[in-house]
Image 1 (cartoon, rainbow, N blue to C red):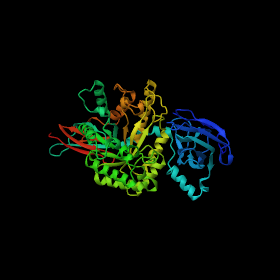
Image 2 (cartoon, rainbow, N blue to C red):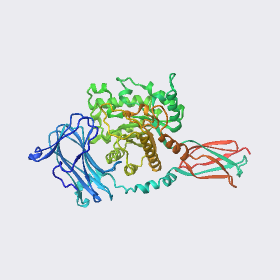
Image 3 (cartoon, rainbow, N blue to C red):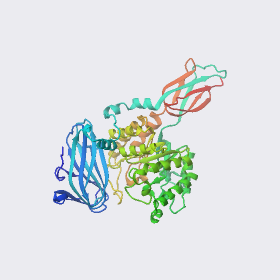
Image 4 (cartoon, rainbow, N blue to C red):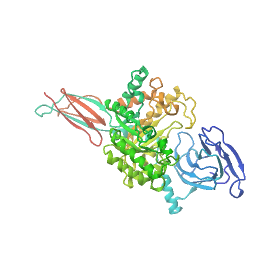
Length: 576
């Protein structure tokens, strides 16, 4: 167990996707001439610098993580304690913006469960120039002996206490949780015209649609075109077979390319197509720091001017596209809103962020009362929980929570997934996985700036993708707080970063993961078949999956919605 001191000993470089390697040197440039590890990186490198120390079998308990450093430019620094093998599970982390020039000590906490393996103590630095690392330590601490201020910081960094996760037990209980959370008894009474029960009458049960959102990111190539190809048609047919919802993007920098010029004519055809095929639509996003238009930035707006633009965007979109959506990401990636400054960053700067968000959410609901207002983020740490808690406490109508889960670099562990869900479920809002991506090629780190080299799908990767996605969907479907999953880039032909996350290959042919999900969505999690009434003219299906159904008996059909919170008792009056 490291106890502090010079960083050079026992640490190794775990950096990824750096365009140029880091240059290490132990130098007497620490505070008051103490030795330190100097790490030089070439400018905006596109990757992440990781300094890693592996710790064998730490005893369970609370640990304090500290790092003392100085940087030549402002950087985002993060300390993380996580499991050693991938997929990683983090036990605690702290992220802080470190200003240039002065020595700074970062302090975080991690709570390690009883585990037999090793953990990695990781220092992450986002695109630094030169960093001087004087010391780092990981020490067990007595939580009861902490000061009230320290105990409050532990609570803030680690979030509410959660029950331990036994992954094997959790996976083994998935089917039982699905039956408990997604099914209920569906009862059908068949009567004759005089109201008498009819015994021995066949009752046909047909599923018409899921209540749960099985969605995908909308691809404009789905819209019919005169010059479309067979591959285009395969993509469309595969999309309609699997999904009942789609996310339509209208990033502000594209939606409003010039002041007051809105591209509603691009969004509305997508919504019309989804409506025509009975698919629910979610909008993404209304406010996103990184999507602020360039023309707004060029105007160097004050905070008031930036808010005025946000007001105009809300007013216009509420009169055109927003009412057409079932749900909308009102805010996107707001935990780290200020990480990359843009024209609207100052609007949500400082401690007043939650109050401003609550104000805009109230205004959104006032103009769009029938649209589910969501807050969506990739930050799944306790910081997201605390921000949502603060917004709700400020009276912000957060109708649902959106979770990004892009896994191009590494997959979530079962423990990580379950802890994230259990923590957010304490807010008593439905949770949607809004952007799920799992590659069918070899997972690898990437950077967002230069073009990535080709990233092919492979047979081994496709098999691993199918196994992981089946497990992920089954676990998510079994959790009572989860209301939907949206797969991002359902096809490789237009996948973000060129990563082969699609369920279809570029030529439209399905990967194994497509057929695994098809089995779950269209077969395993549907109730269908023909049943016969008993002597009392009744059919009871003990574990009918939630959703919309058509029931037919004696030539008469009825439709209704069935769910665990409102089980359907149907009455069919026949002519016989």
